[in-house]
Length: 121
Figure 1 (cartoon, helix red, strand yellow):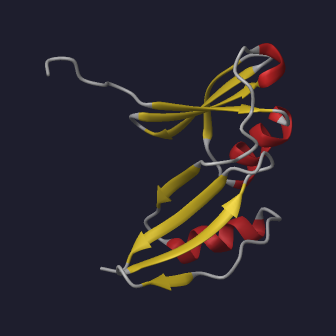
Figure 2 (tube, helix red, strand yellow):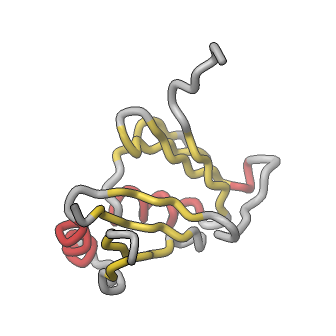
């Protein structure tokens, strides 16, 4: 196929958009790429985005976290876990998965599950 996706963006439609924006900015430490009064786009990586949209201003409504997991591979899961604690968030303990990964799960204010993981190699 000659059409390539240049930059993926996952848009989360939220009932608690202000709290959810604060979570992604202040707890997860994502940088804002664009923001207006109802929509905020974060840089997840150099080539991917995660956006928060206030459902009151859109035709799409919140799924209230149902059926969505955002999975973020990190370089140092222990440092990421510690940084979350320093930001005032209390993440659960890091677990070992049988497929050779360390992992823990958290939830944003809207209820979206976020998987933080690191390969054991």
